[in-house]
Length: 153
Image 1: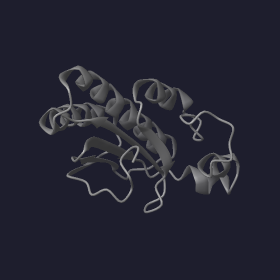
Image 2: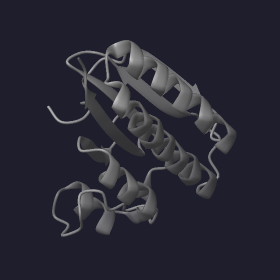
Image 3: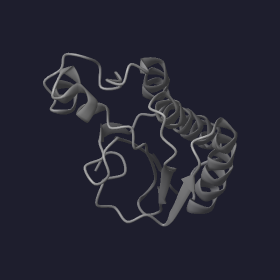
Image 4: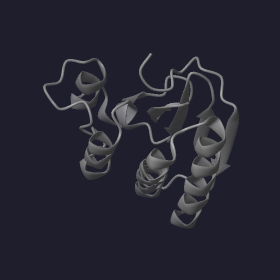
């Protein structure tokens, strides 16, 4: 399966206050977990950059919507090393079934990394960095789930 599926159990979960200063913590943990999981040394910078960008995007969304809830970062080890970054800024609810719903239902003509929140630059960068990227609504808690994975071994 591509990306860290919603049903994949997390090995480690970080809950970070939605402040830019905590993005560095997520990057450091991601690199350490990736190395421990067996991700090739040459991919560690990609992991760091991708997790940092996904977390920074989530923090921007929380700030834009005035939310104090934590940004959640889930790490999963297995056949692939997976990271999912979850924000709680429910862009779909705020659009009341508008163009964002079409994006998540696969009815949009936009590129797979286009961002219905209006923060397209962050996901465009992720789309260029990570081959295994899924962006979809987080059906458990609202908001968006940005899932990425890398090969191990």
